[in-house]
Image 1: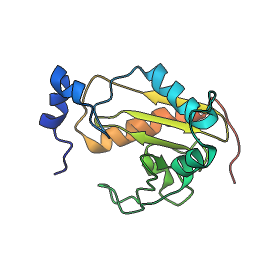
Image 2 (image 1 turned 135 degrees about the horizontal axis):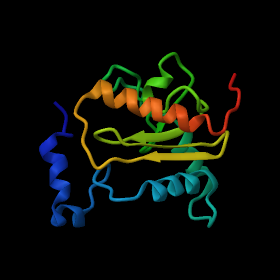
Image 3 (image 1 turned 90 degrees about the vertical axis):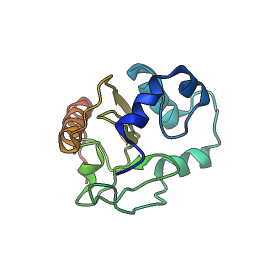
Image 4 (image 1 turned 90 degrees about the horizontal axis):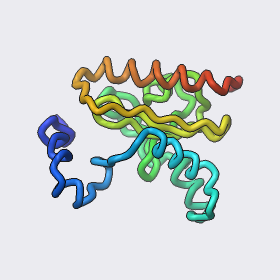
Amino acid sequence: MTEVTTEALLRFNEPAVRRVGVPGGGGVSTAADMALYYQALMHDPVAMWKPEMLTDVTSTVRNSFPDFMGVPANRTRGLVVKGDDERSHMRGMGRTVSPRTFGHNGAGGQIAWGDPDTGLSFCYLTNGYDQHELRQWRRGAAISNRAGELCPVTFS
């Protein structure tokens, strides 16, 4: 059991809970706005962040403890880096994006990422909550694979 329970997630429907702002959860957005956010992390068009901070946040893995599926997490300061190990495709970003791709899976099947090697950013959101963890993972990886094929490149 984790803190991401059905009851906890349903609380985000309450206006008072949304007003509080919960780091790491409860974001309200469109998929297009999330994809643009990942573009900003890759390109910083208005010089909002220091370049060294962006590099750190999007590429420096600080935690590789196993996640709930036993996959090394590859966590930065709030994101996940796909990486190039034998289980990299299991971090939700599939097989068709570069090892430098960073992003994050959300509860119930959400996925968002940016691939600095192709410039592609992607987000899939759903207003449902799929509680089947294997199906969530497979769907996210499959959708990410299709998105990654929009900018095909060869990764060594």
